[in-house]
Image 1: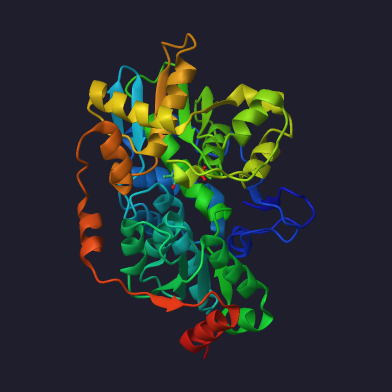
Image 2 (image 1 turned 180 degrees about the vertical axis):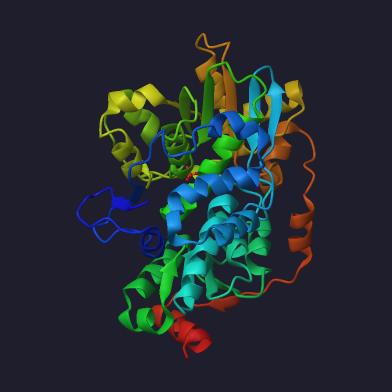
Length: 438
Ligand SMILES: *Cc1c(COP(=O)(O)O)cnc(C)c1O
């Protein structure tokens, strides 16, 4: 498969190039070319319930990767990356939760990050490169990326996080990995971390001595594995004849875009729900036909606090920049923090099911959509984070204790390993050079 840029000003390229570049040189995002209903084998949907999650993932990945990675290697990559399940749990009549938080960092970003990490490591080894991945994190992305690259060959990772600005759980997840993952605790805020990383990418000397790369959320290799679980969810649905709505709690809209690609490949989804917190740029766009990015506001579902969603360029491209065409497939819904708390409490009371604040936004979006005379539909919402990651909020809203999963308990008991650094570019650069330059 070839990849084009949403800005259309550079030549099409291979999968490998799209993955290693991340962002196209014209500033656009890479998109797969010629994806259609005919991309998958003819009986794929019919046979879907009979095959394993690994096989589903492998079939779909093959389409995007083509001949660029040998089949048996790709199979191992997929099997190793998606080494945990995505169960579909019935919550109420015709309402299901697709739990995407059973990976090592307890959030759905594990799918994208683990697949991308293995693909990058493969291409780096093939080209005898030693890549240095730099990531600035305000908490969650860093732990998904750190876990994803842990102990992979030909790659090392440097995570920068703002000192005192991440939760205790997040800090433990970021700083206890060891191996090829190095955490830098920056005396500054998240924006300072991001500035240091940006400056490093512009630094020619660092670039050539360290082969820097970003593990950016706009990388096409992070979207592809998110397609796998939409097909998996459909395979697990008991009543397939009903119309289906899937609600996606969204921030940068990578997860939703992956769903749209799945639909383009023939997955029978009647409507996607773009569910947001008060950072409602996309629901507003669907309402009014005008895209007005704005500074993000802090909410309980903080991984979705995005004021200028990066994947909007891909959504526009998929719908030929036509909002009425986009409305046929996507419905927008948003909610406040009060509504988020109330729904966590209500779902716990009525269904004995614990939602995290992100999943709660998804659930609420789904309920609002189905409330409009769509009782006979199936509804799936994506549960994107484990409730234990947001234990304080969930426990106070639901009035019950959240059980911590074993992986979390383990990382909480390990000693923190981080290098404390000043918010100063030269200090940062010299540290990188002393750690890694040959
Ligand atoms: C990143 C994230 C989201 C938002 O996903 P996008 O692909 O950016 O829309 C939702 N929930 C959780 C828990 C996340 O970490």
